[in-house]
Each structure stands twice: as C-alpha cells, then as structure tokens.
Image 1 (tube, each protein chain N blue to C red):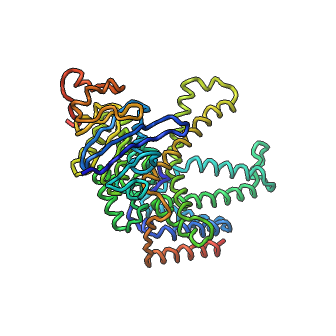
Image 2 (cartoon, one colour; image 1 turned 120 degrees about the vertical axis):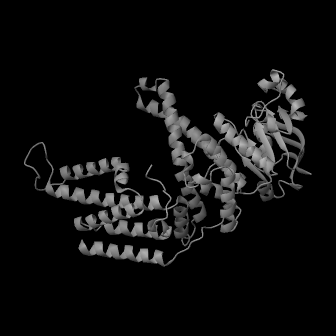
Image 3 (cartoon, rainbow over the protein chains, first blue to last red; image 1 turned 30 degrees about the vertical axis):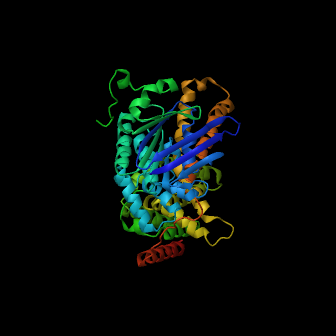
Length: 249
Length: 248
C-alpha cells in the first residue's frame, strides 16, 4: 500500500522560477527510496511538501490517504523530516531535551515522552550522552541526534535531506547503520542525496530529479546507469563494471 | 566547561528548580545589605554547597578566573577613586582604606552571587530552569510565558553556535590578511555582516525545523514534584538569609 501519493505537483519560487513541474509519484509503505539530483533539481522543495512545510500551489500531496493541507499535524506526525544542517535543527539545551521537543509539541503525557525519548536515543546510540550539551557532540552524533528528535515522534516515514553531508567516514557509517536499522524495523525511508556512492547499496528504488521533473525512476541497478546524464556522479564500482558495495561492510 | 549543567543525584541536584531560582533571587537581594562577616559566611556556604554538589570549588574558581580579574579591577578602581585615609603613604600607591573596604565588599557580593548562580546552573537541568521561569511568568498578564521560555531555551542553545560561527569567520578573515586593514570599523563590518547573514539563515532553518516538529502553543508542561525536602531547603535558605541580615 502507498503511504505517499503525489499527483500533478507544481511549485514556483517567489521570483517566479519553477522548482517543481508536474510531479506524479507514489511511495510504498516500508520502502527505501533514494531521491537524487544535481543542486537546484528540486529535491529539498519536494521533501518540504511531504510534511507540509510547503503547501502545493497546484496538485495534491496525500500522506496515508490524507491531503497534507487538510491535516498538517497528521502529515508531520507521519512524516519525520531530518534536515541537512543538524546544528540549526537541534533546539534543546541537552541531548534528551532536544529529543523531547517534538513529543512535547504533540502534548503527549510525560511518561510517554520519557519512554519515546529513551527508546529513540537508544536506537541511535546516544543513550549514554543524554545529559550532554548538543554543541559538544561530533558531526555524526549531531546528525544522529537530529534523527532521534524525529524518531521520538514515532513517524512512519523518515525523510533525510543529505544525511551524509560534511561527515567523515566513521560518521557516515554511524548514520548509515541507523538508517538501515530503521528501514529494517519497518519504517519507510526517503534519502535525498547528490552522491549515490554511500547509500545506493541499500536502496530499493532510485528516483532522479532534473529541473523540477522526475527524469528517471526505477530499480537502482538500472536507473543508476543514466545518472551522469542528469549531473550525478556514477559510483566508482559501477564505472569499473562492478556493483556498489555497502559502506557498512 | 564548568558553566553548564552537570548531571548528578546529590541533595542540591534534587531541589525543585523553582525553589532554587527563588533562593537565588532572595539571596541576591539580601547580599546587597551584607557586610564582611555575612559575606564570609555566605562564601563558605557557597563553597560547601558546590562541594556537596560534586563540583570542585577550586575548579569553579578557576573557571571564573576572568570574572575574578574583573572583580580585582573593581576593587582597585574603588580603592583609587574613593577619598579617605591612604592605605600606604606612597605617591605611587594612591589607594584609600575606605575605598579598599568598599571595593572588597562590592567584589565579595558579586563573587558570592556568581557562585550561587553557578551552583544553580551546575545542578539544574536547563529545561527545568526554563520551566521554572515559565511557572513564575504564568500569573503575569499579557506575557506569553511558553514563548518566553522557548526563547530563553533557544538563546542558551544558540549562543555557542553563534560564537563558533564568529570564530570560524574570524579565522577565514585572518587567513585573508584582514589584520592588514587599519580601520577597525571596516574589520568589524567584514566580520559582522556575514555573521548577521549566517545567523538569520540559521534562524530561518531553525524555524522550519521547529515547524516540522509541530511546534505550537499547546505543549506538554513540566511535571513539578515538590516534596518536604524542597520546602525544607526553602526554609533553610530563608533562615540563612535572616542570619546574614542579623550579623550584618
């Protein structure tokens, strides 16, 4: 069953430039989708429509059957969004305060908040750092805290915008391991990247955007061959005639 | 990094944040009327409480070293500018006894208030301080206490981020020989404008991130649990303040 259904979605920037032009897209519950595209292809704009940060100027976005503009809270509870810049996403003065921010906004009882925060921090491996100030965390830990902040709201879909940006090898592996574990636990994952190398081995579907339109969409092993046509670097392993290997091996 | 919350399970950690803030306010007011004996007692109490909270008093004083330098300057300024009987009969050491005493009392008050403030900061979760501020603002009409509390929280969270951005920009400017510019106004502009721009961009991203996490007016409030220990602590602080007033 599809958890996200987008039809005829158009969006223009305030200066009139088009950013999305007629997007039709469905995403199945429990799938792992990689959304790729060069800078300015419209990836982030599309993601912001999934939890109502942007409303459709034309077309519809349905989350679990409900149009986003009809029930914003439903959209934001169902689709958790992890932004590229973890530093400007973390609002709490300590790690656990930040993870509790979303559940507090949902007005959950204190016991439920405690339970969901504990579980989210354990899931991303930050349980031991719960009292630490976020600005003392490493880049990978900050990114994992941003994921925990979203996980604590118990969303079905997790959308990650450039989750590996500015991370070292170890940081990439830490974040990737959590994303793969979340997918294994049944969540729908949408990862937006402009470098396929790190995540492609885990994806079930690859969608490439170009100038606000879906250029290609399908299984990664076939779609990836067209990547360079759309300004995305072909992973080195494929260039050499092999298959992309997981960074977790 | 002493000026930040240190988790722990000591008696001081367990006291209700509202009582800690009330005690700090009460103590700050009382210290305005306290002389040398009271200040000595208060200083000893602050150091003992810091030790009881598993926070080394020596470590705290070391962390306040620039504050202590400032207090030293206050004492020197008071000693030099207050008329009275000279401490030493030397033309190069113009300090007066009255000035020195007034400066020491003032510096002592500021030091003791800072140490008690530090005790509250070190032993209280920032979210509890925020909730306590919200609780105290609740009876005041026309003040959106939840928004004020959120703003305080964001301020605490983002000061280190803005400072880090400022240091990064400063390094970038120095790498491109900003020190060659003699006009300080131009140097400040080159640092200030990009820093402001980055701060606004960060604020914009923050607003989006908060919206994505359903930020609104209806939020789960802090669950206060005030026990007999908290009331006993308030009683002790009140008694201690009365003692300070009595001996001063």
